[in-house]
Image (tube, rainbow, N blue to C red; front, side):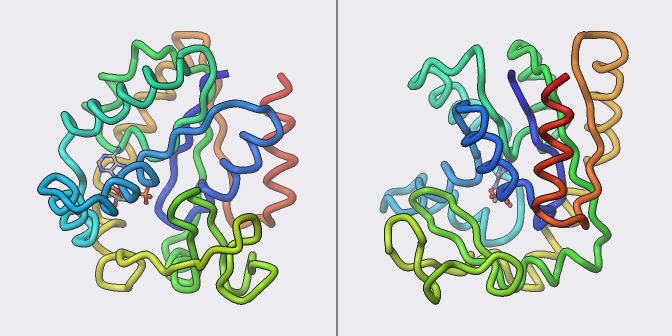
Length: 213
Ligand code: AMP
């Protein structure tokens, strides 16, 4: 299985990604997580990446492809993986054609719910684990369940930047969806629209049924 997750920020991709990789034991590549880990390093590139992320814009395609290829090579992922956060542009979608994606899951959520979900989101930077203060709280207040380390609120999870991120998402959403629907029609690729307003457990079930086939 070579899976891609599409969906607006806050649509629950990260939460479902964790479920899929645990259940099917496939490697996970979250470009956002990798970029955030880069920002911890204190060099010119990491500062540039942090600046772009914190302003809600997209990292240039060539840098994304370097990071993705480095990650794929490092772990010999080529036969099975779950990609989260890519493609964000049609150019990226074309550049990753060589990976022969088998499944695309698209999370659909109304805009008004996104703000509600993103305000209250907590993350564990090193692992990328995602929580929500109300919908999916950690066992202990602002502490990661697994490592016991502190959880943080992402710098880009504030209303002003969320609006910019949504603008970026919706400006390419249709063309990327169309690209994969066409691939699904022409090739051996399966595409699923998921109602991201459903509960976490119901979505688990929908995904399991889809991946079973
Ligand atoms: P995410 O964790 O997926 O919400 O990504 C956080 C931020 O990382 C985005 O707002 C972008 O600034 C950057 N980013 C993540 N993935 C990509 C990508 N495929 N192309 C460009 N920028 C990206």
